[in-house]
Length: 290
Image 1 (tube, one colour):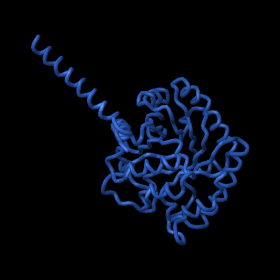
Image 2 (image 1 turned 45 degrees about the vertical axis):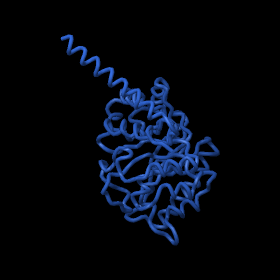
Image 3 (image 1 turned 120 degrees about the vertical axis):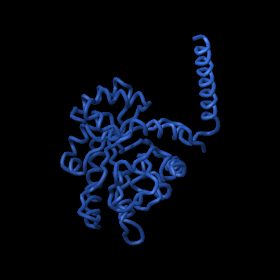
């Protein structure tokens, strides 16, 4: 028993020493992404649907203190605010559907304010098949109008989150470029979902360099190697993989995002393996060097 105990103790000591050495190595040099990212509630949607308080405990245990809610999960905004306050978590952005934004603007603003959010986010716009110019123009008109209401009446900032289908070719660019040109920067900002920019063939880093401060928020995701993209705005959820294991050049994007002044970064993992992948993604970000 004594020999076994000594071996265990020696092994444990070795692991501790290796851990210290690895930690020291990880902390040396300039980190590319020194901050802790936030998380999108959609990442843990299946758990939130079953038990909101327990899932918030998991969110906090992972080290997250910034969340973007895309759903109230059967709670009121007031109830959710109490729960996140108790855990030291802040809600910086509140996501709603296009229809809810347009038809229930006052309620959206009320819930966002109650949650403590600064941003109101929509991911997508109505379209049948491939997005058309007329469908985009209607969305632009709605975004300018409602963005003004949210800013001037409630002190909130509207952001549009791309979902891939907006990058249909248009003139010398894309319909997404047209949206950037036609929306009022005072009232309409953007959240860059890097997977849904990469999937239809765009370079997220180039978009950040081109449009700079129009972007306020970012979804950090990675796309499984070998998957081919298109303009559909859809792919298997399990094509979302842990950051750094897929196709997307995250270091280049993070460097461009820093220059653009992105205010909030959120891990969004749509896969069925978030329990394993989210910690991997956090570890990857913490290990990146400039």
